[in-house]
Length: 327
Ligand SMILES: Nc1ncnc2c1ncn2[C@@H]1O[C@H](COP(=O)(O)OP(=O)(O)OP(=O)(O)O)[C@@H](O)[C@H]1O
Ligand SMILES: [Mg+2]
Image 1 (spheres, rainbow, N blue to C red):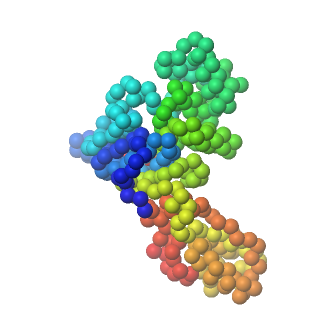
Image 2 (image 1 turned 135 degrees about the vertical axis):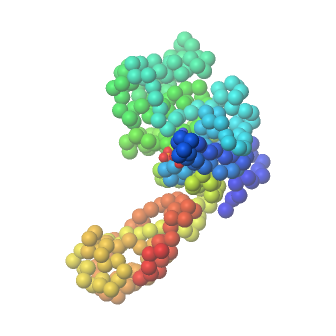
Image 3 (image 1 turned 180 degrees about the horizontal axis):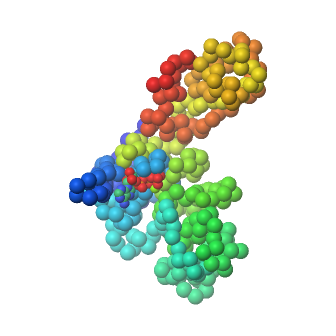
């Protein structure tokens, strides 16, 4: 496992030191305190894609807002692109897709992109050219003249990515970029990220879609209940021996042959059994010994998902031996 504050030759796009955020809500007689981030240390290197994984409420959006200066930290510091987010020159080099992008509904997609382009100093034919480029990139050329009020969630997300990219940012920060996209949009967006990375853009992606992390990111951080549990290169995760779950497809009619095995209820109901990779061979041997017809075996999760679940301590059941009790 890589430590969170490694010393490296690569320049840092984002350098986070001792970052904490506490939200205080409620009334004086029923105060509520949420420790959303707890002393986070993190380096995000330039020209790399970094993925921040975490469950709902882990603190991912809070961390992004602190990096962007949209929230004030309770403690700690953030340096971005070698400076401070309060500097205009630093902000100009950052593109940001918020978790819930909101746009004025009475404007068209083209008008909105034009507006965001003008904020980056573009004007005239250079602005029109860049808007067209972005519309093509996010596949919104045909709907560019429609008002945003008529856009679907996925179309809004595409315009959201477009506005984040219009100023050719050196650092692109996206909070749940795949949210609302259909499978085609999802693949297109993934390809856009891969192309951006090749062109030297630094990417910071918040996500709980683990497949996206695997295909796009060079390093990932695992955030759980405000604590950055690990920062690890994706190659290490893919090489790791964390077992994934498997589904063994067994004909429902074979259920009787499985009596006494710990999975018989699952078999009766769904025509299969779910086992950890740790006990896959053992289970298949048992099924063969009982002459049960196995129709197929397939992994139920990716290596990244299994690693993530283990890191946040949600994987104890995977290591349970056959016949063992649930923890
Ligand atoms: N403005 C706020 N006021 C009070 N508490 C907040 C506020 N924003 C976030 N929180 C709390 O801080 C914690 C972290 O929230 P955050 O939105 O950063 O999580 P997240 O990882 O982005 O979750 P999700 O995946 O659902 O978007 C949660 O417990 C949340 O309830
Ligand atoms: Mg969030």
